[in-house]
Image (cartoon, rainbow, N blue to C red; front, side):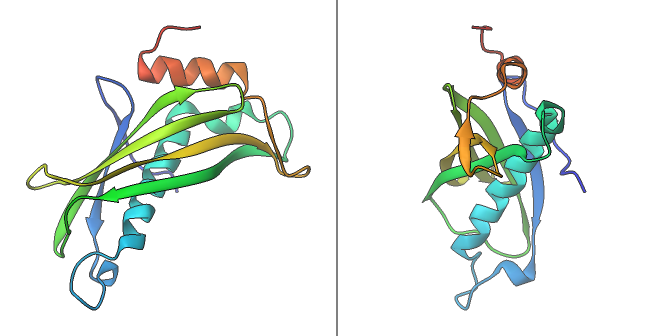
Length: 148
């Protein structure tokens, strides 16, 4: 199933997700690992937005994530919804950075922000490869960056 998303006018994508009862920890707020799951959903939606499957030249090519971090700004509680934006903020030869902002959908307050470094991987060889030029062009298009 593909994550539903909307393109953001200033660049990137946005998704909305329900906070589930099972997302809570023993203290009654959303567990920190769930924030990473919200980002994962946004990342997969971003991959859908750029049409990532069409950039595979072999069945063993695909996206990968090599690092991720989040800054927790405020607690989230059930019931509720979050919006998550994902934007490519840097594009290199073999990697690009996706930045995330998680907001409480009702108040608009930032609950967390962070980023992940993504690569294009040859899974059979377990190594990063140069990003496909067509993928870079699509990322630049979504982000409204000059083609370079």
